[in-house]
Image (cartoon, rainbow, N blue to C red):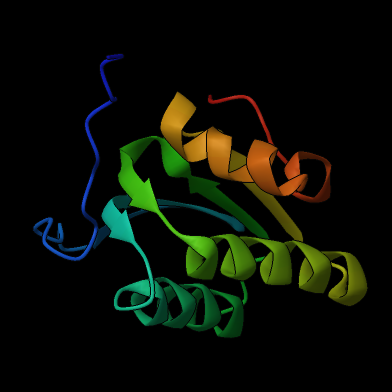
Length: 120
């Protein structure tokens, strides 16, 4: 009998809240979401990005290294903002997250559809 890998039950796992650290530097701003980016928390990051764009920031960097989990809702947010930047003439870049976070992009074949940048 072969050993089965442990199963992770997302429904019973405690959800980590999302906090968003913001670092401003003239026309650029860096956001660092910390915790879980999922259906329940995605509106928080969406709201912060929208507020910062409305405030006139032309360069946004979203640092994914603080995330412990991201689902397809977070992935859609990233792809939507990346497409909006190309269409609207502002810049957005994403600092790659942990291997678990980056795996979401790999599994969905979207790694090339998000503007990943080196951490500064």
